[in-house]
Length: 94
Image 1 (tube, rainbow, N blue to C red):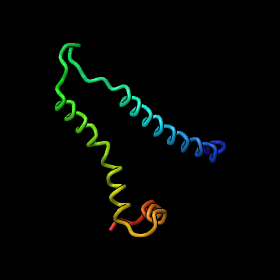
Image 2: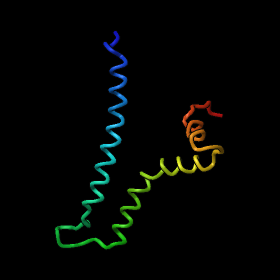
Image 3: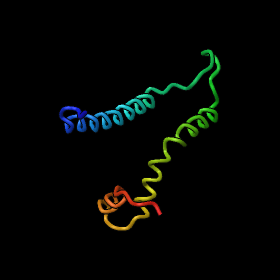
Image 4: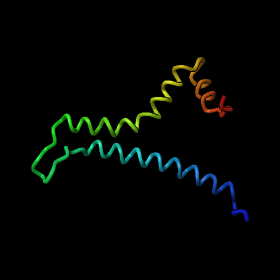
């Protein structure tokens, strides 16, 4: 069976995807702004190198996709909008 108003539901789906991304970014930025160094039992403050290591591990998984996007944009030739359109066009794998 088909759902009533299929274009309406497809529009809602893409709005949901947009809002989910914005909400996730908002939560991440809020946590950066309200950051308080991690403590154990409210007495032991972890050293800066340990906090830096934790942030590095967390960011290593988050920065992979944006890094590949920037690399591909730099490697592709042509004007910016043409490069973006080319990279967003699906192609058959070799």
